[in-house]
Image 1 (cartoon, one colour):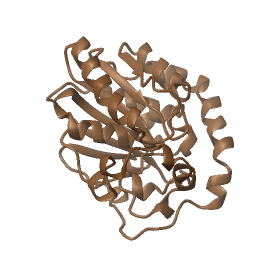
Image 2 (tube, rainbow, N blue to C red):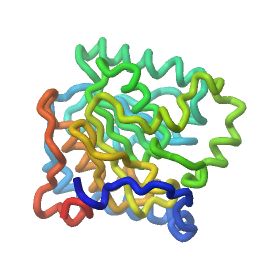
Image 3 (tube, rainbow, N blue to C red):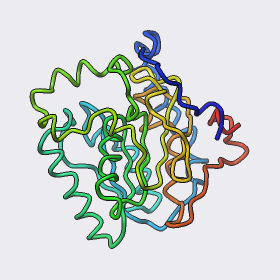
Length: 261
């Protein structure tokens, strides 16, 4: 395991204010870089076309993952958005409908589903996999603070709390300790030290045979359009069932992944 992915303990502060304030601009820069990266994104690995479910972050909807899903679909996968509107947190509707959606998609496709979750969506994805591992092929989280140990590690915490009256009862929502536990399916945590919304330390866990952390260089709002992240997603989706392999980018792309140079 690369030294850069060791999980520091006791980190209770959030990202710096400059990183937070520049998030929108950096997200637009990642979007602008997509046409320049088209050639090598087209050369990314392709897999078996299995089903993929993509879950958006807090206050976002399927519109936020449209480009990501379009790319995954172009690679040949049966990709789906969550179709639950704006993500305002773990409401009863979300907690009831997501397991049904996963089961329905796995049933229609005849096999387990890969889950991709951006920020809060990644926490949903991990908890779905924890409860329904037989239906889950793998989980890919994008800047998801599943290892959050202190609310100060997230600049989105106040937005989350403002909507807490609409959330499900505490008995239905896993606490921080539960969310931080490893899941029993292959998983990849994509994180960035340039994340201006959540502390990158809250987005990773110790690596194992089933789990890997991969660093990229985008902001939090850029995960869904960052070329390096999209190529990584393509690589992970192409891994055959039962034949796990670590992420190894081509030599020419290694500078895009700081912990794989």
